[in-house]
Length: 111
Length: 116
Image: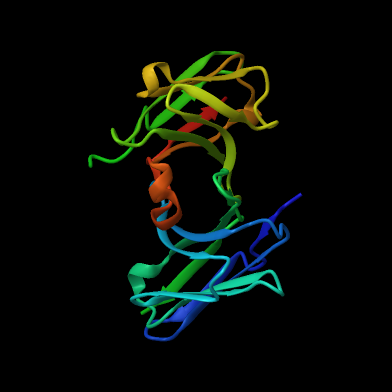
């Protein structure tokens, strides 16, 4: 059973516009959520995280929103840049347990 | 911080052969994780170590897979009698538990296994 879902396999956005990547989860015991970014031939790189007690966390151009009642989170990238083109993984964990990843969304930012 | 190193980067092997991968974590990280990623999927958890103790193994990890972390430093992942379904990217990651929440894991670049 897939506990972390990313229903959009791909997304294309114009440079300078907002990119919104969505993620849904099923396990209500998750207490931290993370986003990772992956370029081809490299390992995933940690991007941003959010605790389940918060509903928003911001780091520069990246903001993650959490809606616990809907078991939904989203990553906003504003403004989008061509270098943001990568695969983005939503991930989640329970306390001191391993991280579970979603299938990823491939973002293309068009110049 | 020299990052997480994995060796080799690529491995092509014939079905039925044994293969071994190595991971060198960041030196001050006491947790080490192995994940496997296939095309179009996210990384799937295989196993993890805290220091030299292997604390959890996924049910995905058949008896043909074994992992070790002697002395709590580098780790090896061995696959015996490889099958074509083992073809994947094998990712190693390390972390320090008190930093994990804020900084996540640090992944290596992975070992790409192709079984022919």
